Image 1 (cartoon, rainbow, N blue to C red):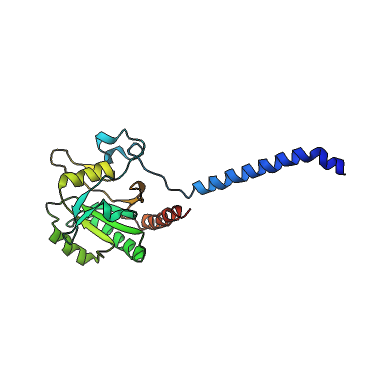
Image 2 (tube, helix red, strand yellow):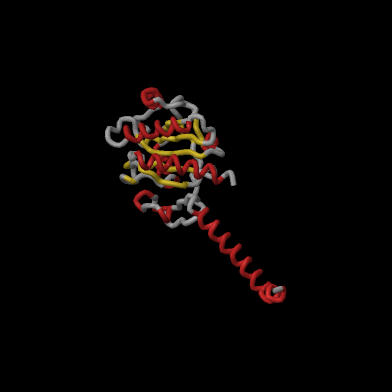
Length: 223
């Protein structure tokens, strides 16, 4: 019996090592299912991406910005430093998809109210109409919490560039006056200012997925 074990000891060791490798590979394969993608200009609908960056396939991040919120305060990328946040583009006089988007963003606000890791950021695509005063009225009407959610306005070219060159979120309506056709997109942005998800802001099931993805993203920083 002892000689039998000696004879097959090497075989047993090899099989144990092989089993350990297979189990490790399965573990990491399953973990990958819970890792959110990092979106680049090359794998987003080309209509939403400015021509100048359509070739970029890696290292894409949200550019620096400086805009005014509903309280007339300057909001920059530093306000979101180290935060996960949800961004979108809207305008206050929109009567089609914006009311639904705003309602759903308000629902997200309720879910993250006590979560210091997550914030919201909404950009107007009509800054000539959506002044600070107009955004303030809208914020009060929609129940915006100033500590969690910034509605921002400012230079139209800067907003256009953010929409088309950073968030990859809206369609162009001609380049001369930086006109934009806003979409229903909500974008999930990570702590490194990378896009980790796109969601239809008018659909409740996509909002539910967004909330789940926020938890997935938060968990990825705990590893």
